[in-house]
Length: 376
Image (cartoon, rainbow, N blue to C red; front, side):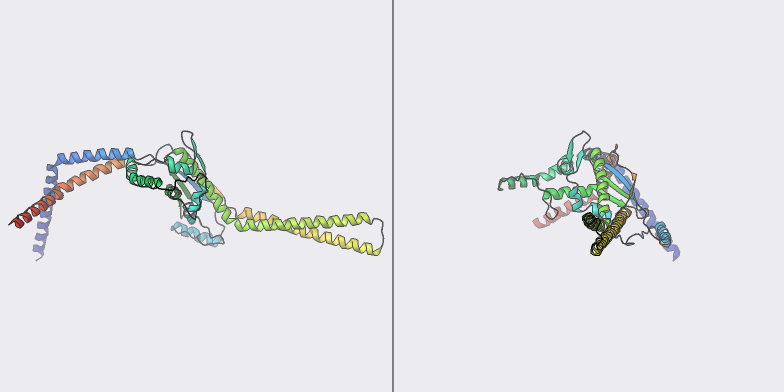
């Protein structure tokens, strides 16, 4: 029984080998067609590769300050980091973890703040980020062809519109964006990326633009805006406390100066007077001045502590990799596109030779026999 199974397996393998050889012979017999299809794929790949505009990517790497944790917690965190687990999320009073940075940069308010940023292209022409994204970015020719119906519809609608031109420049409203503003926001969200390493907490900010100078300038701006955003969030409560302490200190200082002035004026008016009632008034004014001074001194100390608190919780970032103007485009990969098109063309030709031609012939013969039966 076992020998019969082995024989059947050997026969099946031999049959499969024969089928593969037959398929290879069938393809090799049409090698000229394969070469033609490969040439067509090569031409298509060259056209596609050189039609896609060049893109330049600028990357900035920031290292945030180390978290202040206890010794035992730090040891456990180090062990967890070796395993690829980030234990800093949710620890401490600050719930603003670096893992939220990508969501911040891709948010609509953050993108709207970049609209008025001044950038300069490699030719020295200055413009804003909004104008550059909406007017200066180019697209492949087939994108323009596909957008023609939409432009035609928009032109027809404008002809039948009210004809009123709104020349007043309005600041973008995040609650209600226009289609043009929404398009710029979407483009910025796709071209600006933030990645946070879960082990080292290193923040990588990358900006991809068609102009290398614009890419570098915008990447530097995004990094600075992100640091300002995080700093403002983390120091918001401490700055409010500092402002309140400053108000109390100003009030206490004014009260002290007024009490000091009253005491000095009284002493000037009553020099040489030895009446007991005058002495009592002098002591009262002196005590008021001393109390005002003590309060002023206490509020001054509290103000200094509040300022120190703001400085303490202000995040510090170390720039590991600054923004530099890229010299080599990051995409498209022309060689990869060309090889991919040639490969697809050759595979499509092989599929046509092996299966497609026979299926079409069978389909045509089936329709012909069905037509003959109908005539009969």
